[in-house]
Length: 92
Image (cartoon, rainbow, N blue to C red; front, top):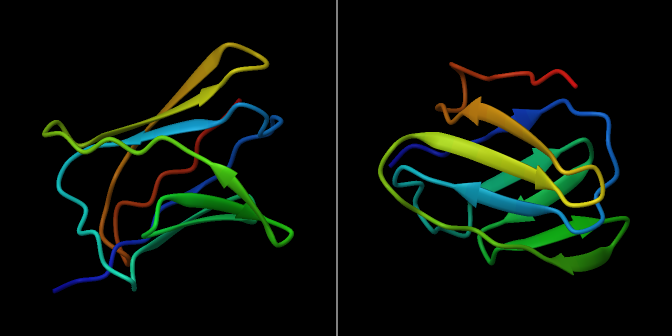
C-alpha cells in the first residue's frame, strides 16, 4: 500500500484550523501530512513545536482537500496526490 504525503504552502495563522481531507486516504501509522512545519499524523492531530492541536479530518469521495482558516475566513483548495506526484502548492 502506498504512503501518501501532502504538502501545502500557505501564509496564514493556524488558529482554528480545520482540515477536511477526502478521497480514501488510508488511516495508517505511516500516513502523515505537513502544513508549513505542522504535521498532521494518522491520529488526526495537528502538531506544531511539540504541541498537539485538535483538528477535523473527514473522508469522502471527491478527491478534494479543503483548509479553513477561521481567523481570516479564507478557504484554500488543493488536490490530494501520491507521495511523488501531484503535489500542490497553494497561494494566498
